[in-house]
Image 1 (cartoon, one colour):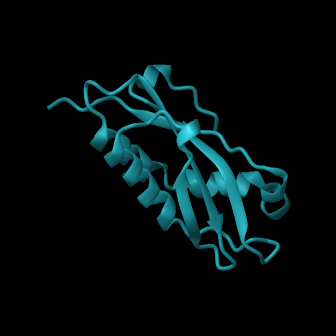
Image 2: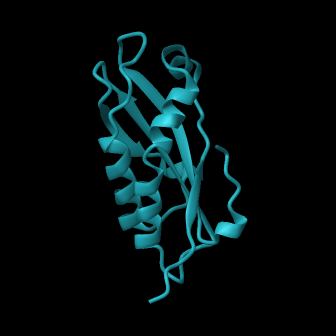
Image 3: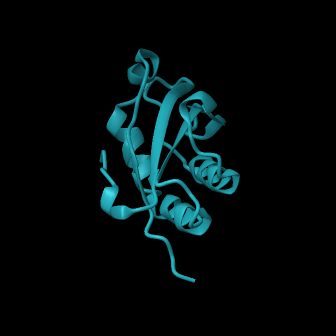
Length: 127
């Protein structure tokens, strides 16, 4: 079976509360370090009938030790309906060990969208 040419790009959005605790690039870099696992999620779970582009927007907390807590999809900001792909992304993000928050307090990442493209030629990376 021919593999689909799929990739993803990410764009980070914070509220003021999130920005006060972390440098945005620190979060981006931690997620980018797991891009091969996220791309594997895409190539393993897309089908020929998958849309050309989907969005999965996640929110999570990073606790005092850098562990992800309260990871959820923001349904009203997501178009992704492929549950296995969503679960795979959430498993990867949930396993990331982030740097300890500079404030030493729980930090909320309010909105982190992933743009999932079936055709690599149309991918516009925000990195």
